[in-house]
Amino acid sequence: MSYADYRPWLPSAEDSKIAGADSVSHTKARLELPRAQELFRQWGTLWDQPYVGVTTNGKKLDGLYELKPSDAPSEAMATAAWKLLAALSDQERTLAHHPVDSHLWRKWQNTEMWVEKYGLRLEHASPDVRDLVLAVVKASLSDTGFEDTVTVMQLNAFLGEVLNAESVMNEWTYNFCIFGDPHVIEPWGWQLWGHHLSVSCLVVGGRMVLTPFFLGAEICYADQGRFAGRSLFKDHEFKGLQLMKALPEEFQAQALVGRDLGGSDLPEGRVHFADYCMLGGAYRDNRIVPYEGVVASRFKAPHRNALLDLVDTYIGAMPDGPRQAKMAEFERHLDDTHFCWIGGYGPDDPFYYRIQSPVTFIEFDHHPGLFLTNDKPLKYHVHTVVRSPNGNDYGIDTLRQHHLASRHGHGHHEDHD
Image (cartoon, rainbow, N blue to C red; front, top):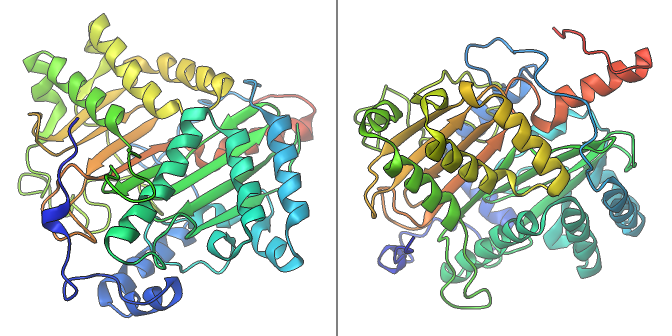
């Protein structure tokens, strides 16, 4: 992957989308725009809906997720989280600490606008508290997962630098929450979100759920400044492209649902101004997404292996035990896994792809400029997301099973309305 040169698309002062001197004033000014008002109104309506999960037809499939330990680093996570909670002021703790079944889990969004009235705002926290927040994240994720999460925050700061807007976008313009009381066995979790980032992590009895897991960047490679050399999405892009190019022509034709990321050959409304081709972004917890593309049951071994390697690039954010459990879960549903593609697959073509099964929903999407001025997708603005379809984003189905097992004194799985 060669990173596209972003410089021709740097905005002039007149073209700049930065509307204020800091997060608060910028957000206030941006929310006066009708388009932003409509987006947050739409998101509010979606948040009010009861949670079902991403499905193919509006009906949740039951019995997909097992409540069994997968060697999550529960003890290290709980220790790090209690250290953080102990260091917070009463006011910070009120903002940051919520019940494990709180609806606030579903209120994340990935714009640069600071609209949430809850959560610990890292730009206003002390350096010691920030370090303790990152210690919770580090204790919970693999080295790669932690590195990628921090790199999103650093590339956000890089974007702020090149736009001369560091007070609006920097590595600390993010929010953090703990849900539930940190414990080695009982359920609890945390969430970190802000521009181009949302990581939701629930752990219960050694089992971890790490979805929704949203990473993005506008300018995926920092070529100067404090974070020079930081980059993201090389493997996500390269392995996705390699898989598509390696498929037989018949499968490529099946996988291809459109050639134009702008949507000229896609159904009306398929391209959204905020999410572009992505379907599983913020507030899309109940999205109905029918299967599209080619089904992996038709793949020969090399293509199956390439698909597994690509999925592992996303699942690899989890520590080893949970990652192995999730990959095994994915493989159990391999024959029901669909792979679809929008765009070209030449070396310079922007593209979108989705990997979707009953238990896994992964998207990669090249976007047009938002803060930069290109109005067509180029390769330096990327959004990715991982979700657990059929009701287990935020570990909601895992939590339900845990409560059921606790009430009945065993792990019997019952249907859930």
